[in-house]
Image 1 (cartoon, rainbow, N blue to C red):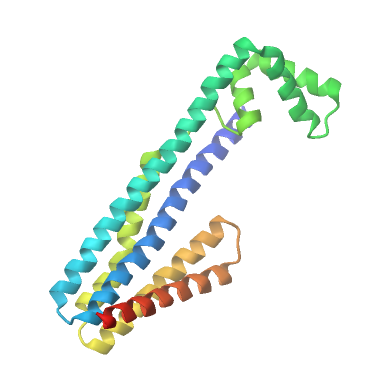
Image 2: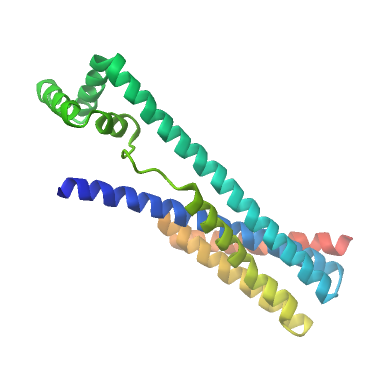
Length: 231
């Protein structure tokens, strides 16, 4: 019972991490694309309404684009997983010995003796054949698949939230110097946050990820400011 609970908890954690991953990617994309448009337009014109509409349009487009991309990506992964389950279900009927050999090799590769590996494989395939095969071959827990809707909504809202702070700073902060300063600060803070979260998810270096994201955000501002000034 404890083993079942552990497996279920592991799968639920994977689903949550996937949703969080989609949110981080969406937030990062929302920050960079929205600030890129905002800075380009603000460098070319001082009309607040034009800047706001341009930024808002890009924010909505980015959010929906990220959501659709995540939905398509995770749906493909889910389809691949269900297809693998169907394939293993057929193989258990048509090539049972090959499946038994595959499970035996799996445990032998872990250092278990051939005799013991064979005994384990037979016992597992007698009790839970399909669950065993998809776990051994594909590391899939039967009945637990990534949810494309969770990833899509996480990306949608995160992208919108990521671009919202720069949009508010650029359009509603009074004074030219204050407006640009607050926009740059908003980009730096939100970029640092996504860098921190992504490094934690990937067990990477937090400081490096935060600095990298901030630098990328500042480079984005610089490039788009130049583009706005050119035209």
